[in-house]
Length: 252
Image (tube, rainbow, N blue to C red; front, top):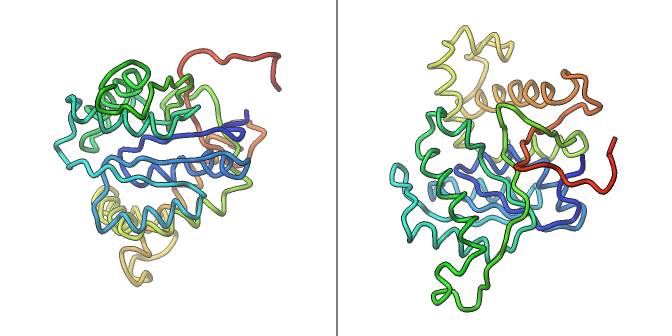
C-alpha cells in the first residue's frame, strides 16, 4: 500500500531513533510532496543535532519536546504540549508507538508516553485548553498507524529509499555507541562477532561497531517484513493501522 501520498504526516516519537525507524514512510511522503514532521519526546541535548541531521537526510522536520527521562506523565500540562503540536501541524496521519508492544518494552517512559499520545490525539479534536490556544482550533486526526507492531496489518515498501534510511541511521553516532555497549552485554563478545562477521578488535571505536551491528539487524528486520515473508517488496517497514481500511475499490 502507499503511505502518506502527499499528506501531512506527524510522528510522535518517544526516542530519536524512531525518526529513522519510520524514516522510509516519512521520506516517501516528503518525496511525494507531503510534509513529514517528527515530534520527539525524549532526546538529550547532545543527541539532538544528530537526530536533526538524520531527519534532514529523510526530509523530515523535527521538534524536540524536551520531556525529562523517567518523568514522562499524562498530566494536564503534558497533554497541552502534545495538543499544541497536533493543532499546529494539523496531520492527516499520525504515526506512533504500538500500544501492545509498549507495555512490555523495558525502555523507560514508553508506557505513560503511550497514554499521553492517545489522550492528546483525542483532546486535540475537542475544545480542550481552547482559551490557552485561541489561534489553534481543534484538529481531528482521522488515521493512526502504529510503528513496529507485533502483529502488523500493512507494510510500506522502502526499497527505493533504503539508502536514505541507512544514511540517516549513520548520523545517530551516540545511539550507535550505546547500541554496541548494550548488545555486547546482551550477546557477549562472541555473539556480536558472529553477528557482524568480524572481531571486535577490528573496529576502531564503539560507534563503528554499533553501526555494523545496526546494518545487520536493520537489514534482517526490513527483509523479514519484505522479501522474507513472500512480499512483493524487498525492504519494508511494518505498521498496524488503527481501525479498518477505507477503500473506494479493492487494492492489489
